[in-house]
Length: 218
Length: 218
DNA sequence: TCGTCGTCGATTGTCAACAATCTAGCCATG
DNA sequence: CATGGCTAGATTGTTGACAATCGACGACGA
Image (cartoon, rainbow over all chains, first blue to last red):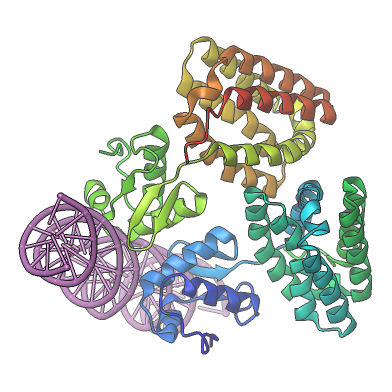
């Protein structure tokens, strides 16, 4: 039922990665229950390391544990994504500013590659790959900012965003527009124009979210 | 060696709170090792829930676990505090803006109380209480912002800041100045002047950090 | 027929023992 | 005397079994 067939993880926190991958791949649907005994048996390990991995995932916000009820994969709401976007609008331009030197210099090829990947995957309508490329693009600024807290911040958001995007493809109505957005973002980032970066980012969120939430169901 | 004598926590995540309190109280110095068997015996519980609590604390950044070596309480560096400050400078004014309505309205008394607490505790040179009041003051903006992600952000920072402040009192050379800073902060927050808030906050960090790091030891 | 209560099965939380690993001290050796 | 390997103790990681709790099914009574 899971897909660790290749890596055959031993026990430490590789379990964590396996579960995370399974959740993000959609092998376990949001709201679905994660039964410890079953998973532990499948992975050929005991429940202790599994519980540890579940605790990790709970802190990351990917699963919700209810006492004596079990662990369920979280459902990321459009509201939460919007909240994350509102904070990203504040910090991501700063990350871009800090990363500007690296982007213009030795690491420029990574930005170019990320942009090209996003363009190619959207052209091919390869949604999963485009999500990867999309997240990789934004991650770049945090990675190259040389700012540990910023990097940590993005790490906490990326999984949630990936889960949301994997489930909810509505925001991907117009893939080409997304590629356009990011080419403009890359351009202003290279220029080092923080304010323009913020504007482009806001526009990007606008187009993504406007396509987005249909109507509240909860 | 620990101080759960009052609450007599059973087992769930109360262990987590006990350990956290012990670390923040300085009962276990930064860098000190947390031996599972010993702690479990002291608390009268097994190692399983204890390990879970340690995992929680590791994610929170309060302890660092090295495989087969043990768990050690983290040492928060001045650099990390500075990084947190640089991000707070971006998001805290936003939190204040979102909280402005509540602060001017029904929840105004909480801001007044926090400001008074900070003034009183600094006047009395009660350092631990002033740290509480100080953190409580800033937390207020995040709490009242009605923004889940912002609140979560602050929650992740507060423990680290508290640990840093508990150990490193250098930034508390001039307690009165800190009280002054926050009275100005409260004033501009009530006015709803975001840019002024940002300036006051920057000045606050400036005065705190300039007093701060003596010289690198790591 | 509907509501309530008790029991059963399933699942999570906890415990104590076993295996794997690391550090410290000692002894032999160059 | 310094250095290398080795053994012993301590500590963490893992396992399987036991206890506590919850939800659901079914019987009973109004």
